[in-house]
Length: 261
Ligand code: 9MG
Image (cartoon, rainbow, N blue to C red; front, side):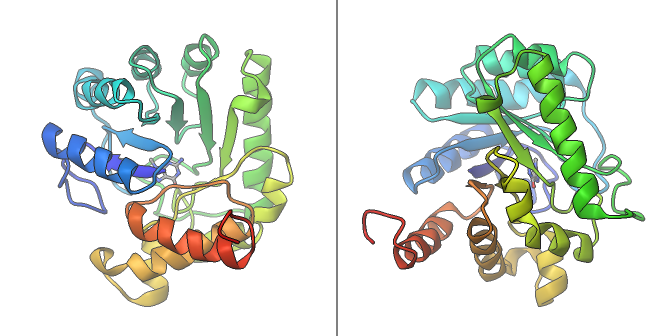
C-alpha cells in the first residue's frame, strides 16, 4: 500500500503532494512501481495534528480517488468521517482505512452499505494528544481485544469477515516499547484470521532506534516492512514503494514464496 498524503502538514513528506497534479503523478508512479493499493489521506493523523472540516477533506481526496479509480488503480481512502467514506465509495474506492476503526457514528453504516474493504486500526486517544503519555496494562492483549471487538461490530453491521483488515496502529498512542511489543506479537494478531496491515514507514520509533531524521529512514523502513511481513503482515503501508517492493521480492525469493523462488 503506497501512501499519498494530500495534506499541507504531513510528518513524512512535509506537504510535498498537497498540489493535486503532484499527488496524481506520485500515486501513478507508486502504482507502476508495484503498489497494489494507493492510500489517499486528506486529514493529517500525525501526532499533534488538528482535525479539518469536511468540505476541505472532500475536496482534497475525492477528485484524486475518482481519477485513480478510473485509471483502474485500487484506491484506499484514509478517513474518519462517514460523509467522506460515502463519497469515497461512490468515487470507486476499494477500501476505507479508518484510524478510528469505524467508531464514529455513521461510519459502520456508511461501509456496510457497500462492498468495500475496511481497515480497522487501533489508536489510543486522538492524534492531537495521543503521544503525550500512552499507557497500557498489556498492550498486545488490549490492542488485539479492541480490534477483534471492532471486527465483531463490523460483522454485526453486515460487513462480511472477508472485507476486514486489522491494524495495530504503530505510533498511534504508543511508545517505542509498545510498538516493538506489537511488532513481535504480530503473528498472534494474524492468527485471528484477518489480514493484518502494518504501517511503520518513516515513523518516529524508527527514528528513536536509528537516530535518523524523517528524511533518512528508508533503510529502517525497509527493515521494519520485512520484519512485519515475516511476522504475518499481509499489507505494508509505505512511502517508498519501489524500494519496498524490491526488498520484499528478495525476501520472498529467499523464502521460496514467489514464482522467482
Ligand atoms: C493514516 N495512517 C497513518 N499511519 C497509519 C497506519 O500505521 N495504519 C493505517 N491503517 N493508517 C495509517
